[in-house]
Length: 184
Image 1: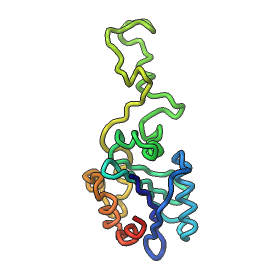
Image 2 (image 1 turned 90 degrees about the vertical axis):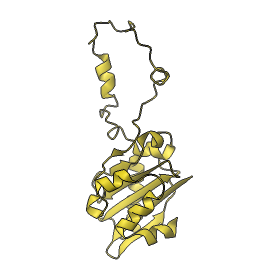
Image 3 (image 1 turned 30 degrees about the vertical axis):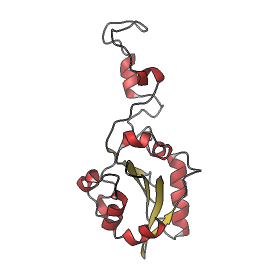
Image 4 (image 1 turned 90 degrees about the horizontal axis):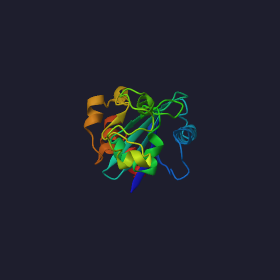
């Protein structure tokens, strides 16, 4: 079960709205959706937070300030990678991939550092994930852990939150718990 909400900071405080992510396929789509919702709330130039969680498995926070690029934090990247909504947040940049889509590790693998020729086995068997071409996503937190620091949730605090009640704790620190609960 997923939960997604938008929090827009206005002159009158935080406004929350639940949101459907069914038509969202990329981070750009998510950013556009958040900016449209903020414009409707009269907060288009203010801070917008997108909260996404999958039960107790993982949560993500996307922060959009005006026209700046979104800042992302994901509590457990490996768990999020197994989720269609999590995949939206796990951009190439966040995963440390080169902009052209190549993986820095793949580039290093292409170098002939062990003396073997391309296509010649090096004595190690590839894992099933590597053979299938699956991406390996690191477990644990990933992204900008300071994403909410200026709003009252420091890096250390954010890193210690787990999936259970994390978004409620963040909203409480922001002074937005009541408005978040209205859309839960």
